[in-house]
Every structure is written in structure tokens, then in C-alpha cells.
Length: 431
Image 1 (cartoon, helix red, strand yellow):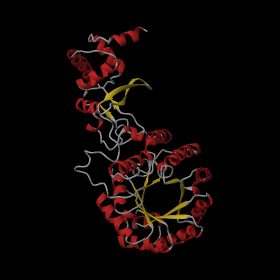
Image 2: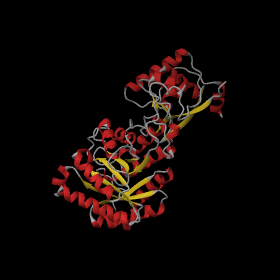
Image 3: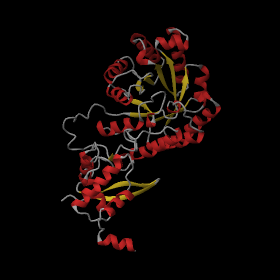
Image 4: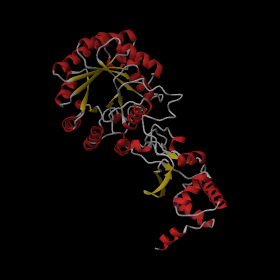
């Protein structure tokens, strides 16, 4: 006989007040990397062997319109990313200001992970990044004709020369060098390969392929990364934007194609529609590809909430992994299934506990009798079938008016329907 395991449900009862109730399930939560039912239609979990995480929340994430991290904000976020095991933290753009330089320098000196500083292919930028003490300098230059001509006002030959000079300057100091051909996905393919071969000859350690304007699709991006890998012996990193909602999918496609690492930001914040999401990328690698990232995923929700607060960018309720609805259930069929076994209407390979979240059963228009009965029992009531149906009707009607159904509302509906509490509950109430 399988021992029962407890699952926590949270009920909102008043602003900022939550009550935890326990419900006994008949089956244990399914562990990650070994879900029996998953070994069926989608049983291919050997596409990748490893996937590194390069976090750019403090650099590209901060470029979200209206977002500005203070010195203390950056230190706090970097500390959590470091503790979680993030492989690289892009702390900022050192040449941008004295405050930015100090923040990058302090993060580099106080964290165990590799700290990266951004720099254009400009001498001042490169020197500022090197002086900040980062272990990696990420230098970049536009390679698409539209940006070369209308943003840089330069030529292709000048772009190649600046790229090579900057890479050589970083490499000669012994600092790890990453180079990005900005707007790579809108760059003439032959020229892109010329640039990649030139910086490879200059000794670059990493080449980042950025989908700067978010125009890639997974299949096309995968083919592109495969071609890049064939033209360099440097390690490959990818940076994808979410203009069409494909950033995380493109990042994963890049990893499948042979890239070692993806640049991501917490809550997907970043320029325009944002970047590939840290939480989505990590959990997809961990749960869907069954590959260990080395990241402490149990702190993902905590990290998301802190970035939400500091960035002042609200996380949508339906945001994957970290949204309020990610592990919430209201539909009667879904709630009934989850009460019996959480695998029924959740991925199974990912549980709320894995990301430091809590499963929620939400009462409203779509709530069914099974869910209402369970919650009435949890609150100490002993309802008949007719009473359960009566209370369920009240819950549905109340929820249909777009009202929030709280535990207080549920108890009021039960009392109005004449539902009695169990003897033990009555004694506890009297006490």
C-alpha cells in the first residue's frame, strides 16, 4: 500500500492574508526525471547533454523601458543568482556611468560565479570592462547591413576590423572574451561567417549569436546555429528576443543545435517584448529535456518576485512557471483530478515544489462539487450531497459576477445552506 502524502493548498481570505490547508492524496508527487506516463508520445529526452545559464537580467533586463535597478537592487539580485548556481551573471555596462561601474565591480568581487561586463567595440568600453574586474568581457558590434549603415554609419570592413581589435585586446589580458555579431539573424549569411571566422582567428572564447530583433523561428535558428558551429571552434552562446513570443523556444533550439549556453532574463524582462525567460529555459531543460543545469530551481519563485518588485514590471498571472495561475486550478474537472493526483492536470515532470511555489485551488464560476466538498470538509463541515450542490451553486453564481470567492465566502455559503460542522470542529470553535 502506498503511503499518503500531504499537498498544501492556499486560500486567499483577505488582502495579504493566506491560510494553508492540508489535503491527503493517495499517491506521492511524481519525482522529476522519471515520470512513467511521460515515456510515451514525447519520450525523446536525449537531445542535449548540458545547458549553461547566462543571466542578463541586470543588463538587458534593466533595458526594459521604465526599469532602473539601484546599486542595492543589483547586489541583491546578483547574490541570489550566484547562490542558485547561475553560470554567468552579466552585471551591466561598466562604461555607462560611475555608479554602473561600481556595481559591476562589486558584483564581480563578491560572487563566486563568472561575472560579465558588456562593451562595444570601442577602446573606452573595453578598458572600463577590464578595469571593473569582471572575469568575462562581452563585446559586440552590429553586422546587419541596416544597422551598419543606418546606426553605425560604417562599412563591413570597418566592422570586422573593430571586432578583431577588441577581441585581441581582451584576449591578451587573459580575460575570457565573448563576442556578439549584433542582429545576427538579419545579417547576410556569408558576411556573418566571415566575421565569425575572423574573431575565431583572433582567439575569442565564446561567440554569442543574438536574435536582436526577435525574428527567428526555432527551425531556422537551429539550422543557423548548426552552421555557426561548423565555422568556429569557440563555444557558442545564444541570445533571443521575444517579439513573436518565441524567445525561449529559439533558445532551446539553439541548445539542441550545439550551443553550450543561453542568455536569459528573469521574468523575461528586457528590450521591447523582452528576452528568453530564465525560469522557462531552466525548467524546460530540467523537466522536458531531463538535463541537470546545476541551478537550485527551488528559489525560482523567490527570484521572480524580487525581480518583479525591483523592476516594477508586474508579472502576468498566466506567466509560465512563476505566474499566479501557473499552479492554480478552478475548473471542476481539473480541481477534482488534481486533488486525486496532481499529475492529472499538471505537467507531472514539474511540480510547484520544484520552483518554490504552492499549488492553489481557486473557487469561482468553474468550480465543481468535488472541489467544494473537499474544501468544506477541510474547513470542518460535514455536508450532505444536497448541501454540497447548494453551496456549489452559490460559489458559481458569486464567481460569475467576477467576484473573488474567499474562504470566508465559502463558510458563509455553507452556514446559509445549513451545513453543520463536525463535532470536533464545534468543540474547537467553542474553545
